[in-house]
Each structure stands twice: as structure tokens, then as C-alpha cells.
Amino acid sequence: MLDVLKFKSPNVGSTKDKGRIEVKDVSITFGKGSSAHRAVDTTEITIEAGQFVCILGPSGCGKSTLLNAIAGYVKPTEGTLLVDGTEVDKPGPDRGMVFQQYSLLPWKTVYENVAFGPKMAGHSRVEAGSTANTFLELVGLKKFGDRYPAELSGGMQQRVGIARALANYPSVLLMDEPFGALDAQTRLMMQESLLDIWRKFGTTVVFVTHDVDEAVFLADRVLIMSTAPGRIIEDVKIDLPRPRSTDMASSPEYVQARQFCLDTIKAESRKAFENQNS
Image (cartoon, rainbow, N blue to C red; front, side, top):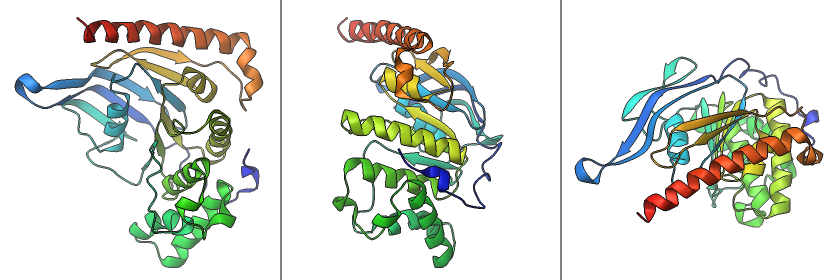
């Protein structure tokens, strides 16, 4: 687990009370006419600032599409999407994104990858470097700053990706199955590390996953989407104390939430299978 309790920066806390997300009757359709495909259907969500929310759903239900709309990469066909009261119409530094594939710049060092965002935002080389060191320390990789991505393990690369996403001090951190390519043990360590970082940094997190255990372990709320076209059909509050530990997996609250999510996902996956074969 990362020792983020030693992390100190005067900028931490700048995201406090920011990161409120409102998805108002959003639908997203790709294509036109007979080839049109509705990926997300009339979805409404409110995520309060600082919450950790996971999105679950069967494959192809529009989880990533909805996340990309919050990021500003995809424009809703209908409805409105707001972050802190401002309509989302393009990507912005207030929303950091972490993908399943590490998407680091292979020709830049770890330090340069993290400093890249602040430099593009207009900060001086010294300011960008200070920010890079701050966030590499936060994710426990400051001593690897002169390494290149190919020299790091998958888990370490993803920690660099998280540091890079946080380097612009976003009020919202969007994560699209970020640990899906990791082995089980590394994945568990990354989950614990992410919770440490989130507790320290305080940003809103929206985390897409297909893993029910991961969602229940991480989240304040689990939003479950229907089969395509996706819409939110369940909003499950996870009543587990924080900080979380793997010992909680045997608690009645964990088991009950896990089973409810599994049953709901199973029912929706069955619908998706039947629709594909009808």
C-alpha cells in the first residue's frame, strides 16, 4: 500500500467541494438512419463532489460511452451533462482520464510524462517539474522518474497514469477499467492504493468496471446499467466503513451488496444474450 500520508502540497484541497456531476436525460446515438445505434438511453445521474462511484453493467451496455461523455470526448445526442454547473462540450483539465491501456508516451521518461500536462497548461518548466515530483511521490514512484514506461511493470505504469491524470488537479477523475489488464494480486494492491490516493486528494471518482467485487470494495455507490441501450437501473449505496480492507469481504453488508449486484448483472447479461440470439 502506498504511503500517501506523507504527501503534502499546498494545492491539495483545491478540489474540495468541486466535482459535482449532473447527467440530465442524456441519450447518445451513433450513426444515422437505419444504421443508427443508441448506446445510452435517457440516463439521469447526480454524483456529489468527492464521491467514489463505480459503474457496472453487461458488456456493450454503454458504460465507457457514458464515461467518455463526461470526459467530453463524446457529445450527447440529447440531454445535458454538467460538471460544477458548467455544461461539458469538450475535454478539460477539470476532468482527468485513466484508461485500461496505460497510454503513456513511450519516448518520455516517467517524470516527463507526468510533467507534460502542466507544461501544456502553460506552467513553467520549474512549476511543471515540481508538480510531477509531487504526484510521483503521491503514487510512490518518485525514485523511478528517470525510467521509461517500458522499464516498468503494468501496475507501476498505471500508477504513472494516475499521477499524470491528477497533475492538473482535476475535480473529477474518470477511470475506464484501469486495472482490467493486471493480475489478481497487483489489481488488489492497486485498488488499495487508489483508495489511499482518493482519500488524500479528495477528487470525485467515476470508475467503470465489469468486476462486481472491485466495485463493491471501492465505491460509495454502484450504478448498474441495463443491457444496450444502457440506462441506470439501480443505484446501490455501499454501507461499508472507510478505510476499506479486504477483511470486509466476509461482512454481511459486503456479501449482501455483492449478491444484489451479481443478480442484477446476471439478469441484464441474460437479456443481452437473448437479444443477440433472437
